[in-house]
Amino acid sequence: MGRVTGRSCIVTGAAQGIGRAIGEALLDEGADVCFADINGTKVVEVASENEARAKKYGGKVLSCTVDVTKRDQVAAMISQTVEAFGKLDVKFNNAGVNKPMNFLDVTEENWQFIMDINGLGVMIGMQEAAKQMIAQGTGGKIINTASIASRQGFDNVAPYCASKFAVVALTQSGARDLAKHKITVTGFAPGVVDTEMWEDVDRSLMEIGASSRPGEAMEEFAADILKGRVAQSSDITGTTTFLASIDSDYMTGQIVMIDGGMTLV
Ligand code: NAD
Image 1 (tube, helix red, strand yellow):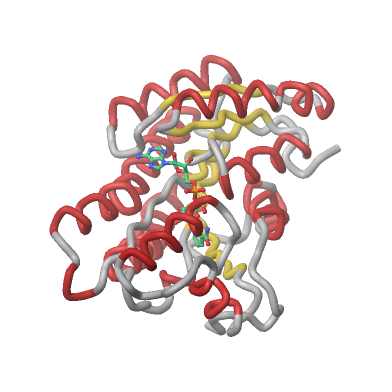
Image 2 (cartoon, rainbow, N blue to C red):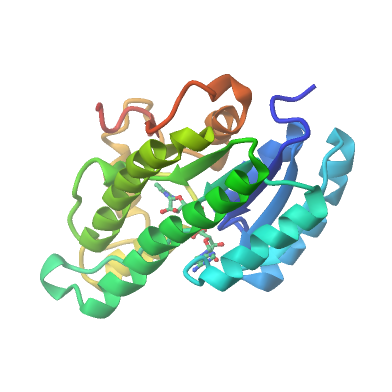
């Protein structure tokens, strides 16, 4: 029996990277998983590639196209999941974006784009999941993706850092507000994970002149990792499945660092 057998879970930003890995790890331990993403074509493929995995471990798989900043779409995703799996137990608010700019060049557009998805998207995701869990009366778990950028301001990514500090605030506020409904709110904070997001970040940093060759920025960050290497998504999923399981029932309002020892807080 897996740690999350029979649990109904939604993971946003699940068409690739960390979100996809979170969903697959949940399936490996018997959960029913809705893979949700704004990239509808890709998330349908991901779900269909995971049909056999779901069958093997006794779970179900679903895909959903959603823009996490649109409340009606988020509500529809939750309804679709409840219709398919019968309930909602666990909601991962994982979708996120970054677009580096030099501090003095940051535009309102850059700020709004990042804060909308990483901040407002998490707020709406928490609210809509909580409404469903309250209606069920069975409690639930909301799990937010924070970052090392939730703990320190880094240069060239000020709006991203602001948005990830916001994730900590939302996790703490949500934990306090939702405890009376037996809903826990936690988060996890990766350091540098080798995903397509980092490839985009790397390209942007070269475009703005903050690094001079592909991979340089990641190497500089990696130099400060006590574990001596950047993470793969599989380094993250032991913890995310734990946070979705009853083993973490007594945790709420906390962010778990999974950064190989980059930020010791
Ligand atoms: P990624 O770019 O590989 O994947 C992000 C996914 O989110 C994509 O599939 C994208 O289509 C989706 N998405 C973007 N906007 C969306 C929207 N409005 N609605 C729904 N889906 C949307 O990124 P990743 O590296 O897997 O990152 C996942 C999460 O982890 C993000 O919140 C990110 O900030 C965080 N994180 C990543 C790292 C890292 O080093 N990669 C480190 C710390 C935190």
